[in-house]
Image (cartoon, rainbow, N blue to C red; front, side, top):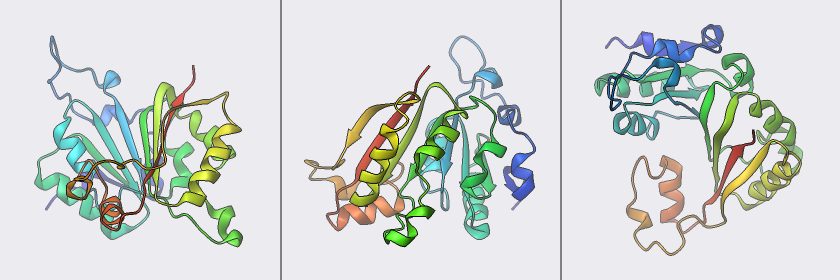
Length: 221
């Protein structure tokens, strides 16, 4: 199956920095006229796995553009294959490390950024490997447009506390617009949720009764 035009690897993920929207065809779905590529909202998921959530988002929202990032070669191609089988034209997939985000995207290029269930690196000696830090949040802020949202979920309470401390250090850049220590509390049917309402890992955590912690951060003007 041909889907190579949807997949970028390594250096290729940095060749269209600031102009990724140009690679998405006009959906023509906009009421009152076609959607200009420069206006198309760009959604970027860090750690998209095999595209379980992103492909569903893209299918339900053809007016948006979606980029999925993961460092594993096989699963990023599996994600692209799923999108190709669905005939989706509004997805791209990057095989790269999230640490390269500033080289992949230009200033204010991203409308919505997602990070779901990152490795919590639970041992103290591993904390330096955690993705969310005040420094990283400052770096990411340059890539998200004013008013754009950074969506974060984790099942790890310790990492959630760590994240909130990091966010507090960059309150000049990010505003917390949604916070939950138990996202699905009170929903007796949460175990029945499927993509894209929950991720692959989230579905398992919910079935095990684990609380899901959530932060939505809005980029300040």
